[in-house]
Amino acid sequence: MDNWRRSSLAKSLLFERLKDLSESFPDYLHVYANRGPFSNAQLRAHLDALEKRASFASAEDAVADPVFADLVRQVLGEWGVGSRGAELISTEAFRAEFQKRGSQVGRSESCADL
View 1 (tube, rainbow, N blue to C red):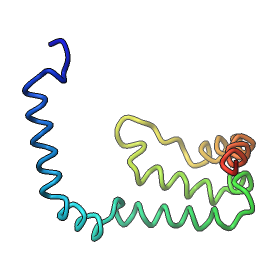
View 2: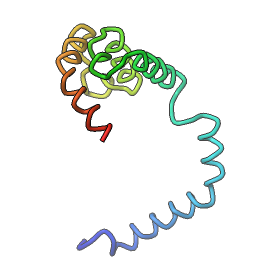
View 3: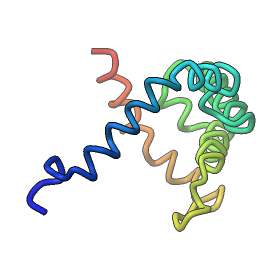
View 4: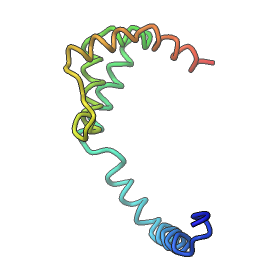
């Protein structure tokens, strides 16, 4: 096949998917509004991490905190890191690696302010 765009099969599948999306859009919005993009555990982990991050003056300060590192690690775990072939390193190793990145995080935060 020269090009997938020339494939009648690809076009018909694409058009069917777009038709379904258009016709079902109110249903998708209803599900999103009632379930959201996160599971309850994922949402709780994200909110806990965001709340903890807000308690620090800078991201660099947050990265130095072992409790914040644990919360970030928990978010990764809730997203399935460590369950599908990727390895989520131990809590102690994660904290150490996280803290090593403090200055990089600080520089990234500075760029975000531009």
